[in-house]
Length: 362
Image 1 (cartoon, helix red, strand yellow):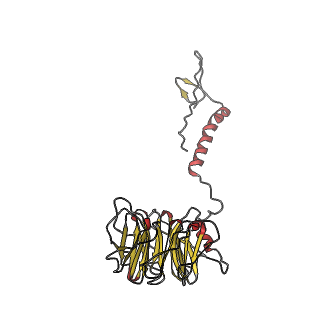
Image 2: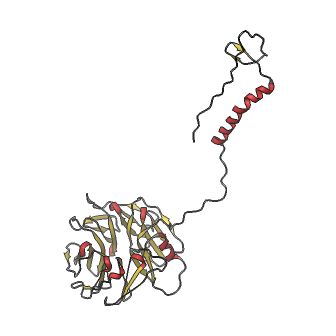
């Protein structure tokens, strides 16, 4: 708080007609002289000296800090992590709100926040290995790293003049990648995410998920849209489905067996390479956001900590809890060496990183 300087003046005029000789050295005010006794002079000087001292102390004397600052945890309560990957034993990479990327190299016992050049929400992250990865998100942001996340760099990608949120990215062999999002964004990346190009014309629809089955690429989206490409993305064709619900996740165990999930508990399965899809929906599950291969079976996650586990043929499903720690949502499920991690709110990811008991759905 700034305070203006105060000015103090001590003025005393002698009454008219009064004469006398002032003591030597007395200040002259107007045309009269006055004298102060030593006690009165000291009393007159004390207030301004006190004020000056207080101002000096406030401006130039800083109190020494006491105690130590509490460090900010890597996983904060306000965080939301939408995408993650497990590229190597013990390594967990997660990306989410406000451009935040965190990484653990000991199965989540300790986390490190990695600096990124954006404050946009990151919707997904995919890694080729422990050093090379790409992240995508709002406003068409695309980030890449080739040194384990010590440095993340923004790269240019095709953009729409309408909307540009990128929702999913898939790392493919040979440093290729596939990203999907709003306004029919279907982008192919090369050289470990260094360059990007559009594969299909822009259209007013959202693509939410992408998968690979052998040489076939799959893209799922709004309104029950499902497309496939059998030539690396050069040409695409739509596949008929028995439902019109928006699809949010798709995965294939091999070239023939796959599962797609979506809103309102939508579950579809195929056993013939995607030529025919069977409706296995579970309305009681609520919205499902992702599905992954779990050995010979499947697991899907979504709202309220729901975990839906399916048999190999995709015909039998049961409801469980993903973490059992809260009723948090989970937008992605990734497993490696028997360990499963689910993207979601910061407290949920922190709970998954805590010491774990053997067994259980997670």
